[in-house]
Length: 410
Ligand code: LCS
Image (cartoon, rainbow, N blue to C red; front, side, top):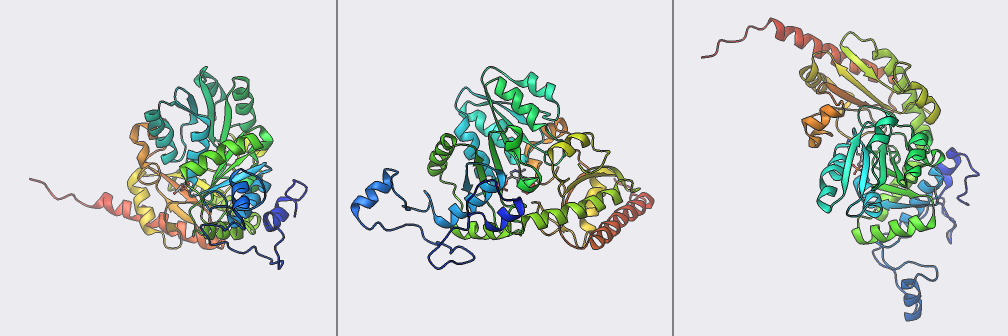
């Protein structure tokens, strides 16, 4: 099928990237090959010169990989996409292409921990300056811009604080000042948020999350708006080398077919769970873009086609209560990652955001007692029952501890 924007996302999810093959299979074959033969020396030479149709070597292009690239490009409404070996490889490919020594990048302060380390620490070793700001605050973004700012990098909603950045306002500001906007769209995915509609220039994804959705692949994707940007990114990816293999591409492409259904089911479950636990006696506060109590609820309604499946909450009793709760869950899996069919629970301060360090976490409002829940597609009553018993276990152990007499020391 053509990959224009004339089909609805549900249709694109099933059909995009499924091109005509000799025997008309419903699912494109897996080209599990590292290299491709040339019929003649002339054909090989033409392909290396960028002429003619065909493949050379799987790091430079592979039909199975290209199929999933087409699917994600179609869902995002982009010109093309580049499949990478992980979400971090996608972030690295995008920023490595757009930034050089002497440039400056403005970045959301509460990004995924390794992105924070890449931007704030590793890239500075290559002479690239950065400022981490609250990208939920447009005045803070404006104040952080410098004459050499080439990129504004936003994650929205942020991981794990769920601060939302106004993509349209930031894109307008960045473009006026000669900078490009890169959006990490992992949390929402292309069904719930389409950053190109709001002026973003480049989108990155961790395919590991909702796009694949089945917790069996690590992968990433960069999506671009035009041929010129595509050529620059492809050159960088070919030379950085962090490409997605054919088998992983096949699995992600298969996962994408049910993306709209999965995401809708997750959003519904998450909304019910957030409403159920918002005023729970063990919960200090709970943050979810689908609740009116979210400070940027209006922006979420405008920019997102659903609340997403991530709920952040802080337990009464801080870090210890958090630990106790996580040790008590039975159905929810104590694991990092997010966006898949299974409900996962984790503790950012000791897990995903540990690499940021305490100071950066404090600045980014990632509290020690913060717990992140990625809601899956199980029956919502079972998820709620598990969280209820885990909260109860955490609370009752806390009470028991209060009555324990500490043995005298020394
Ligand atoms: N961007 C976001 C927003 C992420 O949440 C992650 C991973 C990445 C990029 C990197 O993707 P990867 O290389 O892992 O495919 N987030 C994780 C998380 O929250 N828990 O474990 C991984």
